[in-house]
Length: 534
Image (tube, one colour):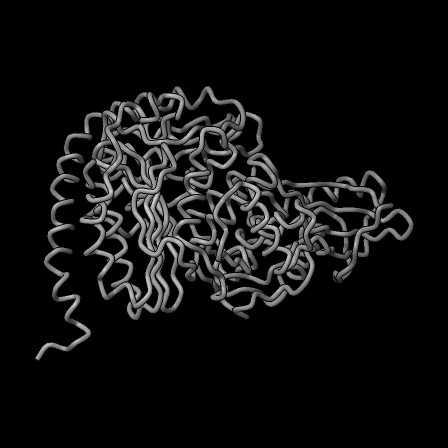
């Protein structure tokens, strides 16, 4: 007997298998053909990147006119996030795996900091993967052929999006990122729960409001009349207390500089306070205590993690601001300054700033947020967007600020409801149309400041939340933000077709019952886009 609800899957399964099977041989052939080009690229890239002397935003599109799906074999290895030495981690790992030379130290300064100036800078996009839009001719990147047609996309995606693993409510949209034209839609104007694909909206809003070079500064201030030392939170969730700061703002460095400034004033003992008033409203996210993020506060070290992790779920301290202040007091003690047990306060306009440390540029924070699906960074960037736009830095202000920034960019915000920056709030709503419009806006040559919203997307089979997915599919060809909540699975990003065309896509599924099956179904749909014909 056939169970009724399984009938659609039985009917669709042959189409699903044929669609997935048709993609793999072509990807495999492309991968084999790419290997010589990968080796040449690795040799050629290092000297080019060492000439970069300051922040630079690369224009974004796919340099696939000659490589096509050869990206899957390894050109993408130079497109992943950079580690603390300035070396792209995916490039290094692949070089080791292939037992060949490579993984050059791109632009590493003599002090080992990754720069010649000693301050962090944004990681540029790899030119062979993300060639400038200025190389287009007639709107077609690098001579790539036409985008897939509506019929071809409907034939490729239709059966895959009918997969019962995608639940009872789903939506999809595909756009040509060269022209911004929608090529395919399925309930594209239906507002569904976006989960972590919300972070794409947060990224675009923050970059638009603050700019890619903006940094978040933590400082110490001395009250002249009382002698109180105030540790002032600047809303930098990447502030670290670890010995190896890896290019991040260091609480240890701030303590050392502060102690030196105090000693110049002949001060060896202070009353220590901490200031978190940059943010307003409740610190607790609506989901409550959760290992996916700390309390949302303007002062924290290492995201309040109680272990040595740098991403993913982890136990958090109950009060990140107080914990950071206590840790700071311990560092002051090491430099000969005794501090009282810290308590909350507010620095006045009469105080003197003693020392500061600053985060990497916003472009780097956006890339890290998207690659690792970092909820703490997402909520911080949402708060800073509110501050920059004159809204209260609380959850209501975040909602108003992000939606206002997107509306100002002319994006289709109808039906959208963004109550946080991370997508952990189940009451968030986004349409597939809005997600693809965000991707198209970030790809626009007139909007280079938004490019990190694309360059930070996880690379299929290589980085972040996609590192273990697409291992037998479109590895390196798909770059996308994942989204997962109980009963919700989403995927939005970019894909390079066999013809070298760059597409943006968004798939949203609600009422799913098996997260792994839903993820696999979404991955099959994204993979099918890679082989869609014009």
